[in-house]
Figure 1: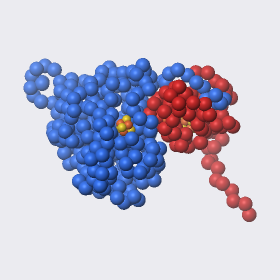
Figure 2 (figure 1 turned 90 degrees about the vertical axis):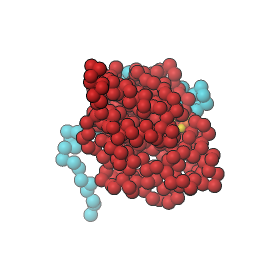
Figure 3 (figure 1 turned 135 degrees about the vertical axis):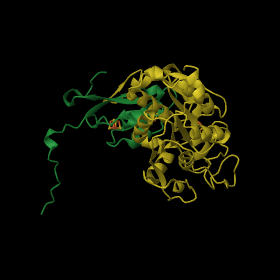
Figure 4 (figure 1 turned 180 degrees about the vertical axis):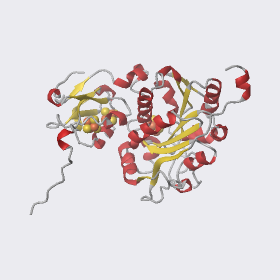
Length: 279
Length: 97
Ligand code: SF4
Ligand code: SF4
Ligand code: SF4
C-alpha cells in the first residue's frame, strides 16, 4: 500500500446504502452506481428527513437502485415504477418520491405511464438512466437507441428514430427538465437538490455508460472511453430549444447538449377524492 | 521582459482545502474514473490487486499533499470505494479518520 491513502472498511454514504449488499452486481465501468451514489449524497444534503424519501424503481440494471438504497424503497414490475410511485405520491404528499429507472423500462413499456404522470403533474422526481439499450437482458435496441447504433437486435444498425426525452418531458408538462451525464456528477447533484424541492413532475435524464451492452458492439470500448466521449462531445446549454437535443451517434462530433433546461412552477396533482378521504 | 502571472488580490487570505484520501480496496472494480478525472492527478492504480483481481487507486508517490478535497473521485465512484476528508494542511499526512 502506498503511503498517502488510508484503507478503511466503510464509506460515509454507507448509512444510506444497504452496504451489506456491496459491491453491487453492476459491471465495471457502468454508470448506474454513480447515479445511486449521487442520489444518496443529495438525500443527505437535502435537509429532508431520510424517512420522508422513497425510492421506486422498475426493472433492469437501473431497476436495481431500489435494492441498494437504505430508505423505503420498492422494486416494481416492468414499466410500472411510475404508477406505483403515483399511488404513494398522491396519497402521501408529505413523502418525496423518486423513481430511478432505465430508458427501456420508463419509456418503452412504461411510456404511457410516463406521459400521463407528467400531464397530471404528479409529484414525482423521475430519473431516467439512459444507456441507450436494454443492458440486463443482453443489449437489445430500445426506444433511445440512437440512429445507426449497433445492438443485439439491430446488427445492421438501428434505423428507428429514438426518443428525445427532454423534449418529450417538456411537451407533456414537466416542471423541471434536465439532462446530465454520469461524468457531470456535480451538476447532477445540484439538479437533484433543486428538483427535490419542487412541485409537480420533475425529470432528469442521465446519460450513462453501459460498456457491456452498448459500448462493446459500438466500438466505444470500456466505461472510461464512453465517459471520455461525453467529455469530448457534451456542451452545456440551458437555454437551448429542446427540439434540438437529439443524440446522434452517426455524427461523431455533433454535440450532446446537457443542462438544466426547464424550471417552471406547476402545482402537484391532488385529486379531490384524496382530500375527501382525509389523507 | 518576463511575463508576470496575475496573482489574485486575495491569494494571501485564501486557504486551498486539503484532503486525505481513504479507500475500500475490495469494493473497487478498476473502472479508472477516479484516477482519470481527478483534477490534480493525485491517484494511480496500485500494483497490488484486490480480492476480485482488480487494481485499485492509491495516492501517487510525491502527491500526498496535493488532494484538494474536491470530492470528485468520491461522487463519481460507482462502487463507493473511495472518498476524502478535509484535513488541516499541517496534520494531513497519515491523519486518521
Ligand atoms: S449490462 Fe450495462 S447497464 Fe447493466 S450493469 Fe452492465 S454496464 Fe451496467
Ligand atoms: S478529492 Fe479531488 S483532488 Fe482529491 S483525490 Fe479526489 S478527485 Fe483528486
Ligand atoms: S472510481 Fe471507484 S471503482 Fe472506479 S477505479 Fe476508482 S475506486 Fe475503483
